[in-house]
Length: 127
Image 1 (tube, rainbow, N blue to C red):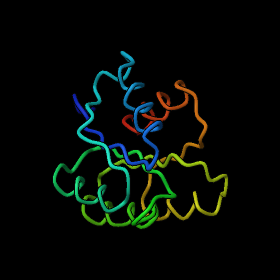
Image 2 (image 1 turned 180 degrees about the vertical axis):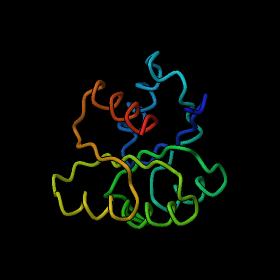
Image 3 (image 1 turned 60 degrees about the horizontal axis):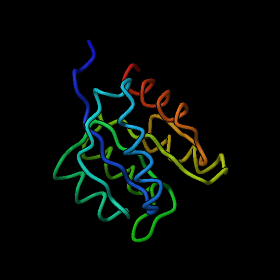
Image 4 (image 1 turned 30 degrees about the horizontal axis):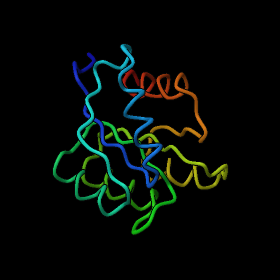
């Protein structure tokens, strides 16, 4: 049975991307997702993650202080059921696979459309 509400932490060093993901959450199809915070680097993300233990995290790969691969590994070690959606500009398949091996559940390339992000969120919660 699907949970009624999911919490989300947005992790990206770009304020534009963080705001865009937050804006897309207002789509009625994603009404069951509630944003609990935004982080601009890996260290900030880990701190917020430990405090909130969100159900879903959108994860950038290239960030200051700690990259998304290491961040994903730490989050999954702390909360194995967390669904991490990697959203990265790196069109490098090896990096995507590395992150998925660390426990991420999905990967979306930047630039992404609103529809692609909505579909990725819906797939995460139904898988």
